[in-house]
Length: 214
Image (cartoon, rainbow, N blue to C red; front, side, top):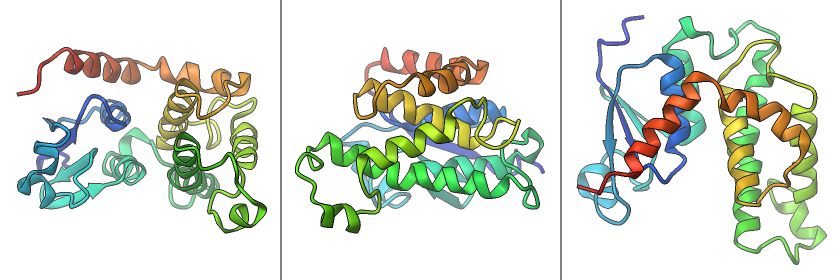
């Protein structure tokens, strides 16, 4: 695939989950234009709202194609750079696990962490747990533990975009005390966070944090 046929623009702020997208871009060896936006100003400008009406980051523009939502961006990049093998082949027996964990992280995990950060779980009733997509907090944690226990990768023996998302969410969740700091989480996630592409993304993000907004 000719990746340079269309420009790739990455909309971000360094204090956001866009750093996860940057990790994925570095894993892909992508050539891209970083476009920093600021909260409350350029992120809510008419120009950017035409790209993402939510006025949030990250977002990716590939020519006329716009992709928002973190997991969707990672999956799009994995398909855009198939030679990097960051997604199992469509006919691979690991494809199901790949979709399962990408959507589980983007759905129940993100929702339950948001609910915990806002104090919505303290008085959760059984009826509320039944209607919530994430069910009970303890069930989500146990599912995550089982997913990574004793594993180097989520999908067989290869690193994929699902590992980028899982390792990043486990790091963020434990750092913010939204997930327990379990040994299974660190044993799985820490080696992935030390990959060269992850370290480059963190270095670029730290450099951005040191810059004053334009």
